Image 1 (tube, rainbow, N blue to C red):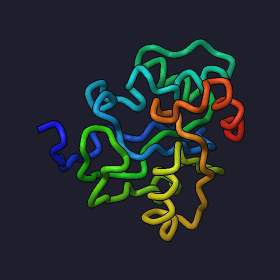
Image 2 (spheres, rainbow, N blue to C red):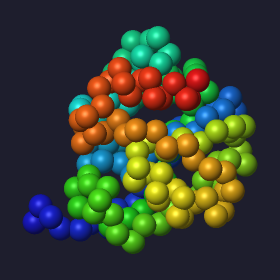
Image 3 (cartoon, one colour):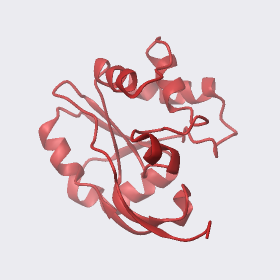
Image 4 (cartoon, rainbow, N blue to C red):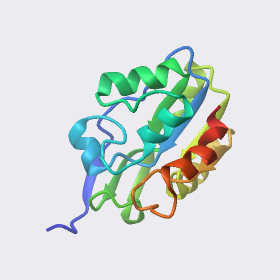
Length: 163
């Protein structure tokens, strides 16, 4: 049943260290990301291309390279949701969302700004996390392949807010 809802727990930890000054939040890992055990694992997602452009680096290929790119530039990465019922990778299908404990990360890392990758992440953050964190998340256009109207270059311009 391709359209069956699955109750899924977030399968991996946030990426951050004591130098992380910005936090980027996605919604929930896609099927491909869950298969690859790391964020933005779908080959059509432009997240890693956008960061590589922003930071004038090569596009990272391995999980170790991706993690190193984030930490080198003070970027923490996590998702808004700790668990949910979802069909495939569709943010629009999310039911029964349970948020991650963003407050605990904000207490541990010197995060100065929080960004949301796409409208779904932004909406879910506002509804489920903002009341606890008291920190607004700046919405950025989604790097998802579903946001095909935005080129990598146009996304990188919008994502300069991270800098």
